[in-house]
Amino acid sequence: MIAVTEQKKEKAYRLLKSSALLQQIMFRYMMEGQIASEEGNLAWVTSGFPVEIPVAMNIGISYPEQYGAVVGSQRMGPELCGFAEGLGYSQELCSYARSSIGSVKHPDQSPLGGLPTPQALLACNNICGTVLRWYDTVSELTGAPVFLLDTPPLEGEQPEHHRDYVRKGLDKLVDFLEQVFGKPLADERMQEVALYSTEAVGLWTQCLEACKAKPSPLNCADRFLTMAPIVSLRGTDYVKDFYVSLLAEVKERISNGVGAIKEEKIRLLWDNIPPWFTIFRFFNGLAKRGVVFPADTYTHAWTGSIEGDNLFDSVVSIYSNVYLNKGLDAKIDKMCQLIQNYDLDGFIMFSVRSCKRYSLGQLVSKELVTERTGVPGVVIEGDMVDSRLFNEAQIQMRVDALLEMFA
Image 1 (spheres, rainbow, N blue to C red):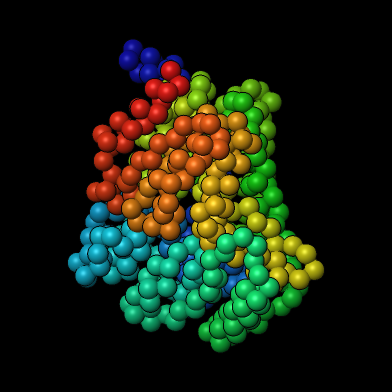
Image 2 (cartoon, one colour):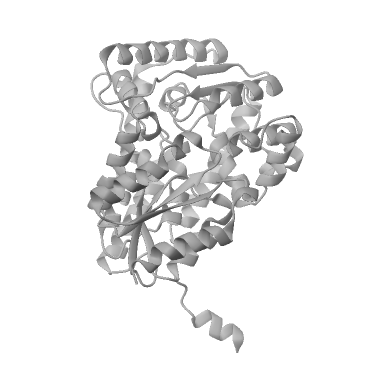
C-alpha cells in the first residue's frame, strides 16, 4: 500500500528523457579518453581552452574540472582534497585543483580510477590563474609537459595588440602539439571541427533560450548536467546528436505547457558553479517550494561559435571574451541582461570559496544588480567540491529570507 502511494505521488521536478542518451555519450567520452591515453595521445585541457584545435589534430581530450564535478557528485571531495592537503597544499586552494592532485596521487582511491594519464597538459588562464600551477604540479607527478595559452583580462573592447598576442599564442600551441604528438593541423580538418562545434553550440544556445518560456522547460540542475557534452565534446561529430534530442524534448515540453518543475511560482537567476555534492538536494528542494532557475551565468558561458573566413581569428575572439576573463562591469551587465530577458524575480549568488575569480566582487555586484533591475538577491557561501565548506543551515536561512520577499 505504501509503495503504491509513493508511486502515484508526483515529484516536484521532472526528469529528462534525454538523460539516457547523455549517459551513453559521456561513457563514450570516458572510454575514448582511456584509449587515447593508452595510445600516448591524450591531453588534459582546462574548461576555457580552445579545444577545437587539439580535436582537429585528432588528439584525445580529458577535462579535470569536469572530473572534479564527478568527485563532488560522488561526495569524495573531502577525501581527495585531503590527499592534496597532506602534500602541503592549502585548503584555500581551488577544490578542483586539490581533488585533481589528490586523484593523480591516489587513483586507486578515486572515482573511476582517476582520469587517464595525460601526455600533455593544456591550460588557458581566461578562467583563472590557478590552472598553471595546478598543471605544473600534475606535470611533476606525470611527466606530461605543460602549455599555457595566455589571454590577458579584458576591460571593454579587445585592443588589436591584445588580439595579435593571443593569435601568436595559438601558433605556438600548434607548434607545441605537433612536437609532442607528431601530428600536423590540416585546414580542412579544422574547418570540419569548427562546423561541428558551431552546430552543437547553436543547439545548446537554443535550449538555453527556450527557458524564457513560462513555465521554464529546464531547471538549473538540468542545465548543469546537460552542459557536459558542450564542455568536453565540442568539435566531435556525435555531440550534435545529444543536443538535437535535448532540444526536441525542450520544445515538446513548451508545446505541452510542461515545466521543469511541477508548479512554477518564483523564477530566479543562479550565479556561479553549483555545489556538485548536493546539486539535486538543493535545487529539487527549492523546486518543492515552486522555485525554478530558468537562467544562470555558468552554462551561458559556452555559447561562442567559431566561424568566418579566418577561424583562428574567431578562436581569439571567443576564448579571450569568456565570462571570467572580463571585468566586474561586464559580469553585472550579463546578470542584468539575463534577469530582463528571462523575466526573473530575483537571484542567488553562490560565493564559492575555491573559485576566487568567479566569486570576486559578488557583494558589490549584488547591490548594483538589484539597483539596476529592481529585483532582490542573496549571497550564499560554500564550495563546489569540498562539502566541508558548505554550511547547509546557514545557507537555508539566507535563502528563506530571500523567498519571504515573494510571499
